[in-house]
Amino acid sequence: MKSMEITAVGIDVSKSKSTVAIRRPGGVIVARPFDISHSNHDLEKLVSILKTTGGDIRVVMEHTSNYWKPIALTLKEAGFYVSVVNAMLIHDFSDNSIRKLKTDRADSLKIANYALTFWNELPPFNDEDETRLVLREQSRMYERLASTATSLRNGLIALADQTFPSIDQAFGHAIKNADGHEK
Image 1 (spheres, rainbow, N blue to C red):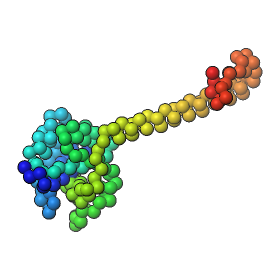
Image 2 (cartoon, helix red, strand yellow):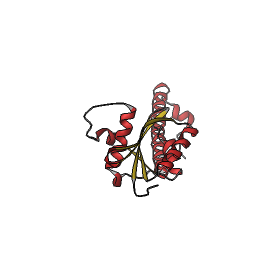
Image 3 (tube, rainbow, N blue to C red):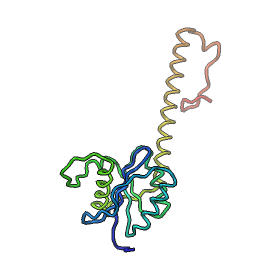
Image 4 (cartoon, rainbow, N blue to C red):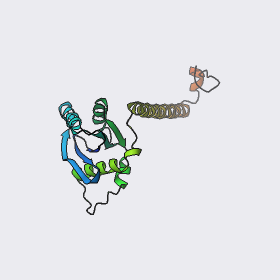
């Protein structure tokens, strides 16, 4: 096992399977692109393949929906350097290919080339960052829900006032805090 030899693993992620390409500098293809399913068995097989490949390995994949998560977590837990990058960065990356191929195999090779080109700039995947992203999304959803609930409530009050003009006298006014919230 050559520890100084760099090895780039490009993974083109899709819903039920991913295509993996393994390359080294100088156009050396360590492993021709191959498909893996997202099952535990296949992911463990991928870990085994990468461990026998040797060298300084960096795995790069696109941030594609949520499909990348089990792969990234499995490889990170196995001790590999994993980088999950925005799909637009890969799309805009020119690997000087003459042909405009759009296949999973070609994409995985392009991702591996991207990894080799930007080796020192690849941001490491951090599952804590992912937790923060989920938390931020949950917070935004809560704010939208609260805003929608307020709009619906205001609409209901307006309709009730139009239909029954003296409805406030029947039920009384709600007591509100200084910030406008009901007690």
